[in-house]
Image (cartoon, rainbow, N blue to C red):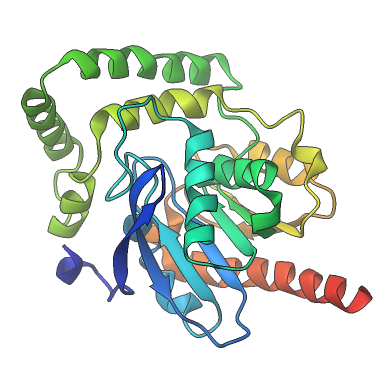
Length: 287
């Protein structure tokens, strides 16, 4: 629950996205002329787990929105198979419903593919990109391909198991894997739909933007987690090299540095955002 979070969280609310379902968003108002930011979290996280320590860092500088993806946390629940494209469409629908101008989209890990797809499918909603601890694709090595191939059959099996049994098994799994975690962390994790998480793992493994990522035409920054053992830094740098004019911002941390060592991540994120904002202002002056 919110009161157990390590830091105070911004106000949150449920938002109905017509024809899509009900999602959950945290929102921080900024100055009247503050650029809007849309924060997109990673796989098996929530907006709170991923960005709780960044909210105070961004307060007063930006109009911040942080949503839970479908199947994650308090995000949309659907009987349809999880697709990254649907997450991107959900994000576009949220910006439309809340009447938010084109945003700088910050995608972390799985949020990176969602951000890339949001640009591709709804270019009018995206003013800039900050892609963190992420890649153009995730199943490049034989080991990675084998790992990601496990998730679709797990998801299929999960769909035929009664919900009560599935929920109890998921709770036991989380208790074993996260022994010693805080009550708040455990409570956030228990909000997930385990079938959607497994389907999301398969979707990440199938994702590739290799053929079209070079078409990105908005100011972009890539934040590279230099000690990352989940998304190798070499893949993150290939993403940066594929997008014309991208700036690279390095943070000496692991994949979870945004939450576990926010003092390292926050200044790098601020620099990446400042780089995107500066280029947007230059564009505006040239028009």
